[in-house]
Image (spheres, rainbow, N blue to C red):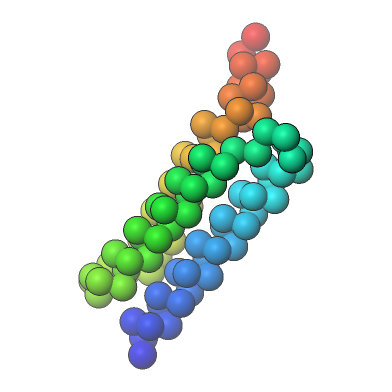
Length: 91
């Protein structure tokens, strides 16, 4: 029961993090230049981390949540608005 509950919590975190990524990117870029490739990468990465958590019981919930959070930050860094903001910050 504990394993199922932890997998459900991880799944909820992945869904909420992906939804917040979608909302943030939509508000910044609008409908014209939405990064669908980055969204797909985020969804695939979330599915992989959830499946690893389900398969391996020794993987802690905090490790899985932390790894997906870092992955989401990594994906968000390489979107066009963030790259443009970093270019403006450096120049």
